[in-house]
Image 1: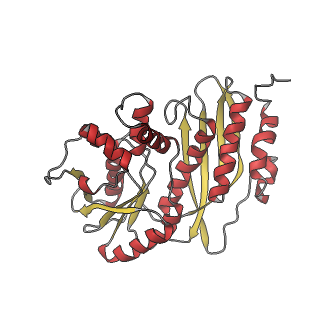
Image 2: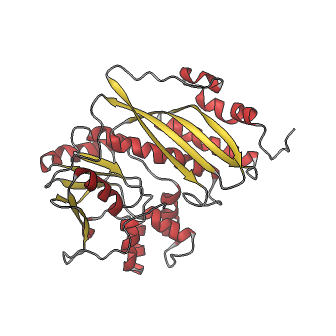
Image 3: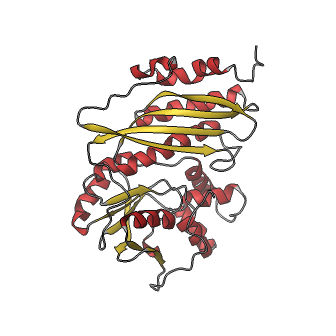
Length: 330
């Protein structure tokens, strides 16, 4: 028998923590088989995405385990949202250090249960392994949308307007707070930024309403400049973003007031998980209605232009000299 605070063996762990998360999906077969079945509704197709998070890279070891789980699910929902897909189900792969206690894992599973209910998803399978390094959590998410309606990175055209949901830079600034690299903010401001780092807010309700309106879309994970650059590369266009139009939270504005140089962190820090998209001017009113119906704040932040690359324009109209484009793993 394992010690009371240690996880049981693999199959007992799956039965105790993860099988209950699959109870509402008949094709998961109680996680007792080697595979699961998915039948999309008639006239719809599956959208599949995968993101993983690694201890010490995407979250800090001291982060609450339920929030680690919810972040894992949400970064994948964010990808689905940016494609215009409705979340459906997911596969989970975990590499668990032996030092993780049963209590930690139970709180992790509780976080998954909370958010899968919120987003209308079910666990349908996966794999577990033990390791000696950092914890690794990999999630493959499935969504559905009408055949042929996926919003891709390619398709932006010169003259399109560039839009961003929510606010920008909070998560990257929150990480600075956690690392002791950002001081001087009131406690409430610090807590707001940390909350955005630990728990993103994907926008599936907005994503499904943008189908047929956006020419190109993706979510912001590696930083606004980098991800807009990806959209531009695939679309074979350039983009100009006006810094004065960036949607900033009160806490981010307070941080910038303390140190204006943090604008680079806001533009390139990443972990925002907001929808970034390009759409024609003719769709402006419909986009405004879509955002209102979804209950999601939306800001027009720039234009798609001829050429290549992304410029972030300051109040004087000149491009900012940025030392980095965005987050890179390698």
